[in-house]
Image (tube, rainbow, N blue to C red; front, side, top):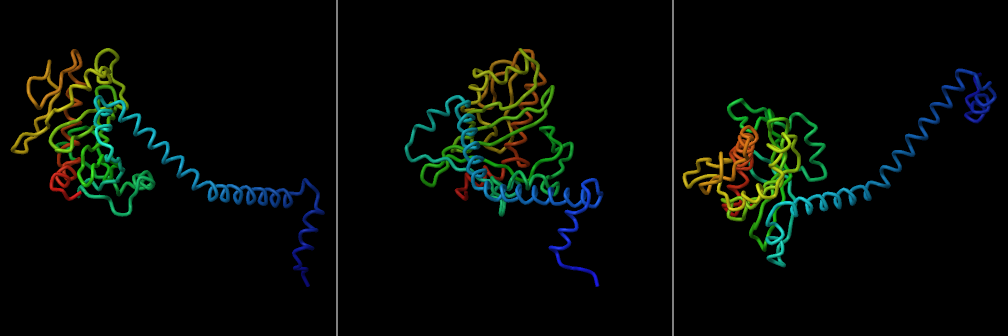
Length: 266
């Protein structure tokens, strides 16, 4: 009868020569199992620390972005009651996305089902597919939204342009912008990172009373309430910025959210 005693089996395994294939495979298996258990245990134990660090990193990045938007420091310090919150938005409905949090947003966007293909006519910003969810930041004073900070992105002349666009609480005027990533031509399109150009966004309107999208980067100095100053010698970058802002403040972007806030439903 076969000896099924595990202790005896272990002793027989140890008694085999070190060059034995069976012993080598067995030791490799045990080593891999031990490493897996150690990594899994460390992941579980460190998860609260990782979550806290991620939250702190996000807060620090947000504060840096806010500081980079001209005029934001004055807005933030204007009221002691103002508080900043983060929420993940379902762009189609303009409401908080059910079941998606800032912590789970990255994983949610790995699923291609959570992206919406855009037709060439609708794809004003040149992004191809629009994420169904976006993380936005709200500055509230009591129940009122004083400021809304929205991530925007689109195709520039040399590559993607990413920015944080701040909207005033009236949901009709832009408070400021901070370019967070770009690869435009140095000395020309790359001037979108200059503070002076970004300052020209403050107070700009993006649509008229009839709801028509009017925002534009001018070909020279801004001459209407719907324009920001142009960038000399950077026509394509200027056009790209016009399209990016128009897309994200329109119906395919944050339009539903802006409408909900204006109605006092958010």
